Image (spheres, rainbow, N blue to C red):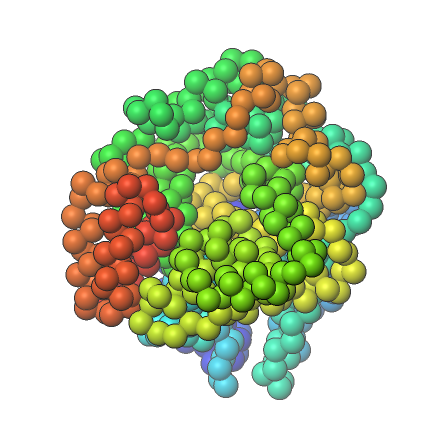
Length: 572
């Protein structure tokens, strides 16, 4: 893993060096720069593979810097990942892996990001300069100023993250998954192109695809450890990694309250595969310490409460000397592991009701703030029903909650890049559409951003074998994928795991953070910040707080809390 920072145009050399230093946590092994008039390219490296792969690399009139892994570089006839990037110039579409890169050829600057959005890349552009970086903080430092983007709050409340190009900073944008940005240096114009999409369609053997994907992610000069929750996804990855690597260290996080802890299931898997297993306990003190650390470190609000224990766990793994960690992200989205997918499929049947116009009028005139009302309103109004399983605030809820008008249907604006990609694909199956939207929103914008930030804070490379182009393609063409939640993955996992793990009821990730928060001064602090900033209507904020005490609207509450705390640290 590495960090990229670059400036094209007017360059303040010393300030650029200092901006690169803000990304030191992403790579302590090396710092190198390429500098000439009108160009600064900086790189911080975490060494995983090939100790001589110094960056930025200048070859054949091109300068390359890169973050991540190119898993198919040998298939492309290259001897290294950097050479693979140069060989794939100028369309770069043959690259497979998790990556963000920059290529400068004297006339143009190219920036690219992998199709799953595993590695981040942000940019700022004005008349005199183009700035890009692996994290927003480096761009903000270089600019010496920052301005809040008020439009971002609405998208954040919808999804817990911003799935489109926007960020919470005016003028700073991010590349989307599978996007190639081309900057024409002479004209200072930007062109957005595509590196590809997860919407592939070719027949592969699913189990072999998963095994190959896992083997690719074991390449490197350091052994991989594996996160182990006791669920099917992480357990299968750990079992395969143990088989392929030989020795394997696994790590689980748990809580003293047994209602939340899944340590017994993780322990069962660890014993079954004979891994070197470590259990990490996470309590109230660790929660607040880590929460404060992440509020300061994260460039944008923390949209998922699971980020806090994950960040703590990576810190513990770092203390044990690991640089590479495997994780099971993607299993639920690819293999329909969430119950909501099947609920939405049932709801879609209501589109065919003969007299649904009467119901359309009824729902519009009998407003209810609950999400179920919103779903039926969409169905009977011929609106797009599914907007990701991580949708939190509906547009009408935001209109009640915010001190600004939010028109109904606004959340669709944040999905437009992916809806256009879906239309171009020619695919029509509802379950593939839902998986695709969740992979772009729930995974890329929320979970993978969380994983990258939490792991790289501790200079650890997190790898996600299930999020592989071949695995997704093999799953999408298999007609049994829709039989029941995770049917395909469980059939494969049954060969490697105890039946108790395969048959256990899915348990959403939870821990007693709401209980801890309600016993803290954060509630008063959030009310005070809101009074000072005026983002949310006071009576609606009180409604959220009182309901959160009874475990209702808890995700709504979390988004409001973390936004206000983050805003106060960064802009107030």
